[in-house]
Length: 381
Image 1 (tube, rainbow, N blue to C red):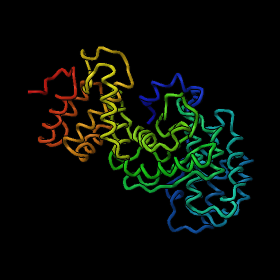
Image 2 (cartoon, one colour; image 1 turned 120 degrees about the vertical axis):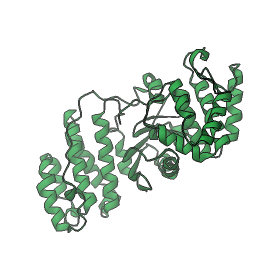
Image 3 (cartoon, rainbow, N blue to C red; image 1 turned 120 degrees about the horizontal axis):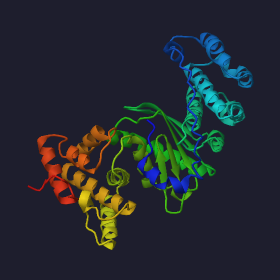
Image 4 (cartoon, helix red, strand yellow; image 1 turned 180 degrees about the vertical axis):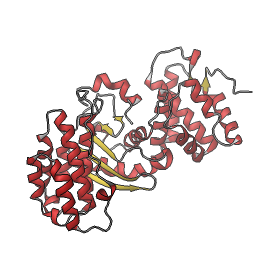
């Protein structure tokens, strides 16, 4: 799901030097071993080692293969170790296309020097390390993704990894990179806390990996997101709302008007942190400074150009009005039905008022009547 997030597109020109873009080469093919190899439920460590030697290690560069063969866990390996080897193969291919093949061996060798690794790498730790190399592969393969190679050393050093099991999404590996281990640990803990609730509201998480980097961003930016990559400014590493907000962006993979996507992300962040009432007052005061009321302006009524603050404020107030009128469950149903689609303003409004039960549709029509200016259809009758 490679699409430019709305929030990132707006800010891309200011953060290109922070989230370094790739060179645009086509991603190399990945090694996809048979399912029986990846998840052999009854096979012994001896059988897995033979598979590793015959199907995996032989596909690696000689330097990396030598390092792998020297690892004690090769004699006691489980399925997660085997998928780690598969991730290393993919990562070497992606790095080789960029002329950085050696970096994969160096990163893995760096992991072997850490205390958490040297006391024995269990299945969970193997799954976490696999996630590190998968996110490195995505970074190398996608020209729009941030370059994580320079920062994943902190992920490995401080073991800022959480292998989560989510009710709908299954296994998701959360990773954080941060110069400050305390800030990184907090971001990891809060992301792990919020992600299940974001999944409950927005639906199945669309990725198996998620990388959060605590990194310098422009002064007015708390966070940015692009697919399975999130950036959090150091000053916001302890801000629950910003972390929840960016996680929400990562669950939306359609293309929406800014007012809707940002309004929804602010709504979820404030809903989960108990700040809905305070935020409503804050945004109404902000709009008053622009001599505007609470309504989203679309079509001919949008007499101003792009304005992130106005769009975020009016979008939040629209989503909060839906919640106050209908409760959280209809909001959940609506978002889940829309989140993978593409809409302009008018199509989105028409879809919103035709989603749900007849009773819910009538409620949404009243919210649209009171909170949207410029619709080509009259919902105030």
